[in-house]
Length: 507
Image (tube, rainbow, N blue to C red; front, side):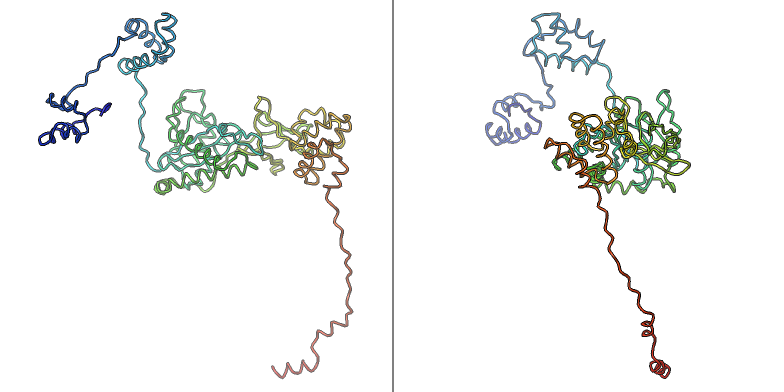
């Protein structure tokens, strides 16, 4: 057939059939043309024994410049692309090398690199023993465009993979690749797997390695974490992510699985972070079910876990200022006013802060992240400032972290309208009253819905009417009348003399 090379089997079949059939029938049976049949009869050798001849259909257009101009450029910079070299030749030789010669130049360069080019990196496939290696890495999730209540959710994913069975564990992480996130994710993975591998491998995470030195040097916290679980720590060479390939390739497949699940779901918005974490966890479990047989084998080779987890937090001290705030790692947090002037012992976890005073926990806050614009992040709870703002409502307008006080978007937009249409005094009093109502009466969500409706209608909120509508009603106590019975009626409960005599006879 045209375009297909004739094989030795076709030639043998043709020659065998040709002994008893005509040339036309034998060629048809072998699947070749009559012209090819005539050529076969003229050549005694098989196709595999006949070297193929290649010849040019036209003169090489780069023959005069190849050795003098192109090859020196390739030797100086082997990564030069063909399109770059063609542009160079077009500048040096106008109207001599049209764009249509790009494919020809690409074939020339490919052939030169195969014969004279620099050596390429060799990838060595690895045979992983069960229970020997576990790998950790973080991967960005921005491309999935996840939102929480229609607000973009900036996060990354911690990903752990056992090299032999491909069993994996993933956790949602807000913020960066911190030691707290690594410690929490790794420990959760080990306890879920039911054992620890002999070796833990990662790339050059700053949470685990002192990257200012060339030699491998663990941080003290990471070294303690490895010792607690009896694992040896290794890392791949810097900039060589493929050396962590067992987890790097799993990143792509896991994100593809989450992406496909989102497409089936029909939208990418979640009610809260817990709902999204459950969604990711379900995607990981589906992938693990496919590797269940291999994991059962690896589970028997994992090391036993210690009796308890090790610490997955970092402690820092923070002074609560007279503004009712404190700063931890360049992020501003709020605290109840009663803690002003006290120095707190703060434990930083990957997702929260636990604040202690004299050994007792006094405050738990969600861990904040840095602003996307590069400014200092803020985690402000408006409930901490409501009572103070009631006494000084006009301080609200110029408050430095005013925008962080609004619990929902509807409150912020309401403030914009109040500020635009009322005096400063009235606007501040109204917004503070609304925040007080939301905090004191527990109506933050339903009040936000009502404010949204008022904004659509172009009306300002009537604080007095809203307070009457949403403030909890005082329960009316029922009137209970207790009638004390006469003592004499209790005598009826005592047995009579006749009944007493009957009981004695029976006994």
